[in-house]
Image (tube, rainbow, N blue to C red):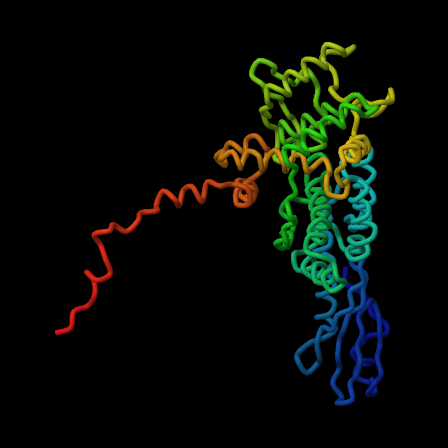
Length: 394
């Protein structure tokens, strides 16, 4: 239906004096000092205000040009709404999506929610809050990275924040959530991080730690330490294990959820024997290896062993600032590298996503490179002397 104009008529526009302007239906006609007429629009489209200069009368722009532009913008907005989730009139902003994301993740026992909420509330929402969820571009994220870098944030810190964003967007684009299309997922601009020093325990420190854990009031700490040193598993992977996941004959544990996906985790005979010993004392021989201390918890298993582990570290005379549960994983993987285990085998045991991550340990702790180059160490025979190859003068 064509718009009716009572103020923005051709006669009224012609009668404008320099500096004067007329506005109607979001279209603005303004006469410049040179006597030309400039047309612009100022309208709400899809919940956002658009203020844009259309052009000048001398360029062939008329009121109808501005009308057609407004209709085009509104048509594009209607087409965008065809993909809206049921029951919504507008697309989600990032701020809305962040609030719903946190609720859903907490309701399903999401991991590391303390840090995820901090990333969202303190950094991501203030920067991206009003942006439509499906319109977050790589360019916008590059601006975010530069902004955080200018504030003094380290590359690793910014990468963690963008990882939270990635987790939110990936969930938002699933069929179950249906907040956006996978085609609208932006490529996240990540930067290479400066690697931290890998700390490992000496054989003597490992023994002290295990003895200290066995003396702790928590009866499962010794088993937790044995897991870490014998299977190179992550903290979260250890506490979520059940006896019915253990194949005692083949020395394997099935891990259904991990960073690199599900896997069959090899374990040592020492850890297998310890698990058999502990299972014989359990009320439920098929249940959690690290059951929750309090009944009625959501997960049924212990979620965090850092407190008891720290007590064992202090009792062993080690520094808790450096000796964390993850140090046991570093120690186990480094022991494999020092034993000249090949990279694919280490990767199978450690559960790393890529061989490149394993190679870092091999470069630091493996002697195989030096052993390999020594195989090329061909000495010069005594029969070959520098004199035999001296250029003759003639």
